Image 1 (tube, helix red, strand yellow):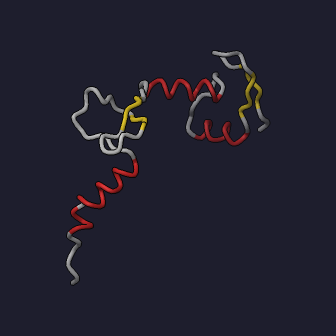
Image 2: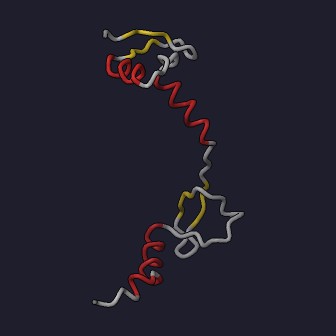
Image 3: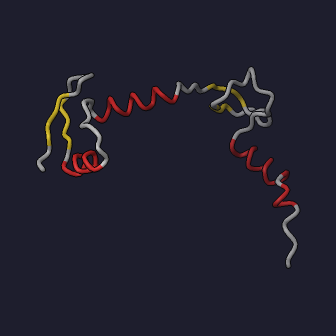
Length: 102
């Protein structure tokens, strides 16, 4: 099989469908793509939903950080990486009370 050059149905950019991709698609009884890899990836990402990032400050040290949840609506304490790691070391039950030696 030779590589197929095709124009994207969405952006009209030229893209290749290589031999390995053609073989894989034929084994799975799937049709050849009509969109370029970039447009296909964009379509997949749109199915996931939009993600929003928020700037806020660490509630312990005041360092500016970026988080993926809205600090105005969350009831959780917002910590920077350094303070979170310290909090985890101090409060993790596995680290504090490891399993007894058998």
